[in-house]
Length: 188
Image (spheres, rainbow, N blue to C red):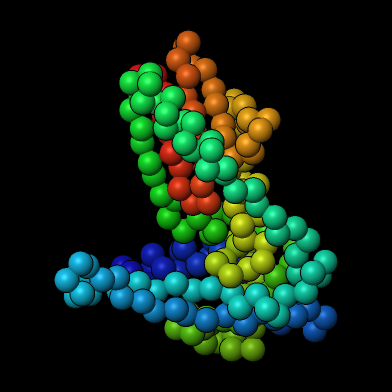
């Protein structure tokens, strides 16, 4: 069951294609890490697959890398307003955030160790989504989440590009985006 699930996830991230002659192939790597608890014992093991972007070339593999970062003053102001108004504050973390970003340029990576397609060893993976480590990954993620929020009717702050607000049935809802974390508050 796990193998079927894994292959479904990876098929949404890349396609295994013949290696193009005129394109660079970005190297990739697995990073293994043990998540420790306070007593030093390992709670769980984590693995992350990421691109080694030092081989990417600007204007060939990517155009834009910039992704705005929320101002700390916006976070503090939102928390102060929430406290003053008696609103609840919620925080959430977006898991695998970069996999949610769609990339515009053609980027190819070597087939990851453990996920090789054995009848196509000379093929590479043509990316459809961003991976950790790609230079354009933060920009791709921000572009996608920004379109999502504005599509729902949120207004972006003129002062801080990562602060969104909307009035629903006379009640405000405020969202602050901090990389892959969202802080939400508003009137119940």
